[in-house]
Length: 104
Image (cartoon, rainbow, N blue to C red):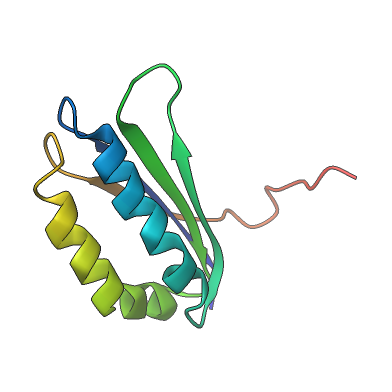
């Protein structure tokens, strides 16, 4: 099973950035504790207020699918739906064999 990377981008409605960020931050700890989670990081864009991005690495597609069924993710999605401008943009990535380098 190959690891998968998920990039999830979202934009808060005007004035809702602190609430969306708070809800997103609360999602990190329970997600990191899930089996198969390798990385679960939240970023904000310094150039666009209210723009957030999750960067996630999962050991397998199965681990990711299990994450999508978790109550904490469902609760976040319900809260976020009231705070988002538009939809969350999610893309899933697979590593190309032989095309990586880890700096020493």
